Image 1 (cartoon, rainbow, N blue to C red):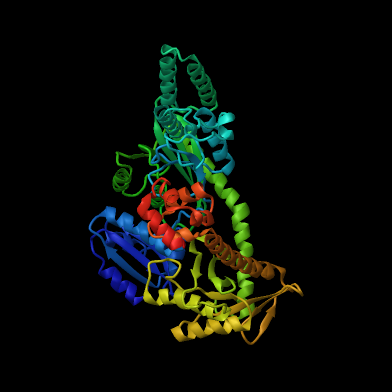
Image 2: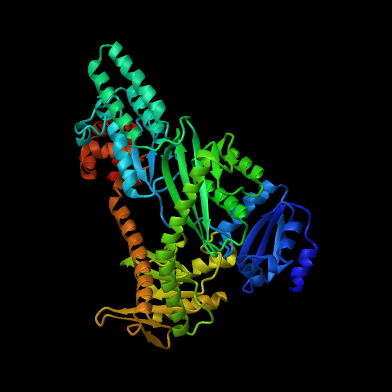
Length: 609
């Protein structure tokens, strides 16, 4: 044991807190929490014979140890979760889901809400629903919802004073066409409420509402509307027959199971709503998980519900988490209501936990057959890359850069990041040139690297810029390599730099470093890897360039007129058709447009000439 570790162990307090373990490269390899730091941290360094293989491997790699004292165990829980996301330690489990699950979004913050499929939750006042694993499943769910409750999907601006022609979806029964005045605001709001209740799994409540609505229409002698509700009721009941029922009570519960082997871990979450199984999500957890089953379960639960907006009243678990009362308190605060964690031993809940564990086992087996096999090939390519370039270590983190421009406009750069041979899209960044105003790839590359590594030297919480890569690749030849090296030398940063040179005429790929070049044609595996990095950097740069070009082309002379926002611009263009016709129009004609008025019309005439 290193003397510095021994000294730290002697001085550990009796307080709650978080401890951080680092390896010989000063890289964080494990973050843990403790109710009593002294007891927990010292337990790692006592008898190695009692440790499992993962914990023994962790302890053998620890070269330094530090800790952060917190006021409460709850603070330690939250800080541990924050640091795991920041440092991505090798021996912690990490909920990293490469799949961006589709969600159903209902824009309840709008006067006439619309429904759509999205892949990201935003704090915009809308409601989000989803435990959807496949895009096909969410499309099917959306189709069912629209047939049962015909909510609009369009982005039309709807005003009761201005009726519009209904679209095709109205004619085929998938939209109630509030834009045309075919449905009252009250009835449309009821459609939205029923759709949201249905998506939440409260189908019994929806059935009750529909029955009441049908009777109301029948009592008012509105038999056509009553018949439409009757048909909707029939469809809902047919759908409910197909769902597995696990309780006769209107229960709301998630069920979480884990499956761990010697080095990997998977988790599965089953969602029960109104006593019915309505969804499943499965994850493979990154990291070796050098912890007890209870610690792994607690870490997963905290990370999962940190990212998941929907927390049920009850969560059934396969293993009891450490400090279960603290975890319940954190989840209850986030939910805004009591959350209960339990570990069922018998009955239906225990059977569901077994089902969740089986789903986790299948997810891990699939992961081993596909992802681990692919990762092994990537790791082999990285080892070959280390040998070919004469690097000191295998490049586990690679950053690649490319420049794209449209002459002297839209000069941009891309930064893509590969971790362990795989693209990590969350770490991608893009740059729009500020200092460089003319086409000059070398100067653009230098500005990009100055900004990127300047962020590193200045200290930043951004995970992308907070560490150095093991290898830096630039799209181009010797000139690009020399330009990049010049920046790094000025900043006092030592990172190997190579250029990815591609000769389309001879269909060859080479890696160049300013003095020598390596022909990749003889090693197809290495060639495929470098080509994938180069293509990804190029794609990301060109995509940003095209986005800026489209934005420029969509701009109008009206954008330069003070007092003209997007809504008024649209109103003017709807009224006149083009900026040219607005120039030709009289002050009276312009001021007649809704929201303009004589004063603003005079400003428009002056600015447009």
